[in-house]
Length: 246
Image (cartoon, one colour):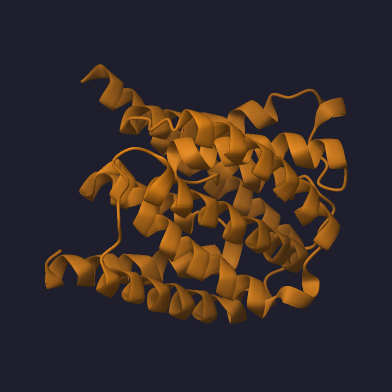
């Protein structure tokens, strides 16, 4: 990577970590799109994993006292099951499939009947959505709107949601790093300097976002989070459909 390219990626990572630091989402989705446009899919997955582990890890550290351990444990149990299954298959999707899956996921959640809407406090729901989110993580690079919609359905305040989801995301992105770094054929690697810059950018962006999250109300948080999910999902659907056509 050239110095100019690394500088551009670092600036993008600060901005996306800042956005994720406020809403616990969206930033990773945007960064994944940028990386898919500039790197091969395995390389994009690896660098994105490093960035998101740092971003979510620091966010989880900042808000750790608000984390809900039991919902996180339920979710991660399902994630572990799905990771074991996908590791046997070692499938690597193309970019069009990844983008369409990202875009479709939030709308599939919203179409579910009310009586089976996700509940993060139930073991069966945690295993189901943990499995689905890990599958999406390995197919598309991020759990995206699916995990956001899942935790938004829980009776958490904004800080509990940020902290609990951060714990789950650290583990999920760690699994993605292992999957694309050693499990699948043609495993990728991350340039050491870019990895260091990614970690630093994630910490800076996340730290800058904390005062803004403190001033937001839970109503403002949920309203804007839902809007952001919808806009990003539609963008990915359009981009994925374009790639399929061409």
